[in-house]
Image (cartoon, rainbow, N blue to C red; front, side):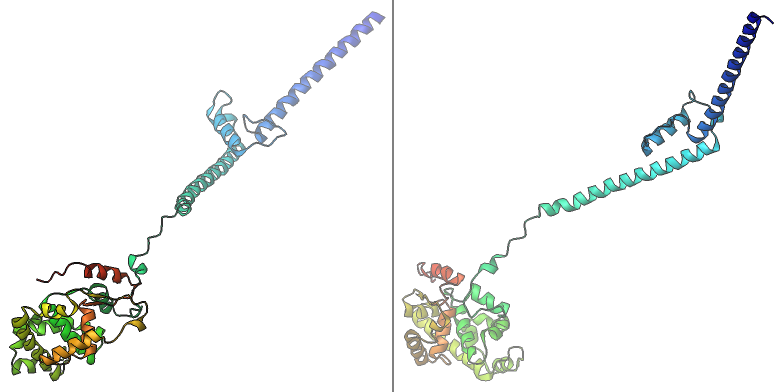
Length: 326
């Protein structure tokens, strides 16, 4: 064999070897590609970086719906399991995010009012009303009401003055609270303290009032009120009214005192002693100086609210008005 033929033979062998190697590499690439599709679903590529669940879910949804990439026959059971697992994980994460968002909104709604709390209701005015020291936190409501509305307010009506005189006479047996709780019953029993009506009460009516357990009045107390009513009728005939007779003792103008402490408030005064003597001369009963002064305080003939009591100024304003007896 010539040298030229040998060279051609080697060149041909070399060409055949190259063709075999090329064919072998092509076969190997096909097999690797087929196995990679089982590991990495269609549309995903092997990279060194990690993929988020959202990108995985998006890629899976795209590959499953995009027929241009692959057909359904190329998706293996392993691809379907991986796709389903990733979808479940992504769905769970989305639910958590939604719940977290809803929770944050609810918390914001709950917390937001706390940041700007509504103003607390202002205390009632009664908490700032300073009363006379003998009105305490344990005082009965009826007694507090009497202090706030009646005691020290000038009274000019004959019926009301007669009622107050009778109630003050009962202070020998009861205190103000006990008397005021039965005030309406006593007023009804004595016909609204119309002196003309009470003065005409007979023995049967007196016995009926005495036996009334709700009134709890002794016989001498009932008879005292009836006798005083008869005296008032005489005074009305002589002076025109019981009011004008009583207010004449203070020149028709209340006496304004400015006591700061309960110990300064007297139980009796020279004026009360003078009135008491005159009433006794006219036939009145149970009208001693102490009872008379209590009557003057209740009827507003004298203003004895302590100066730091909220009612002192109110009663003084009423006292400074012109005498308005009718």
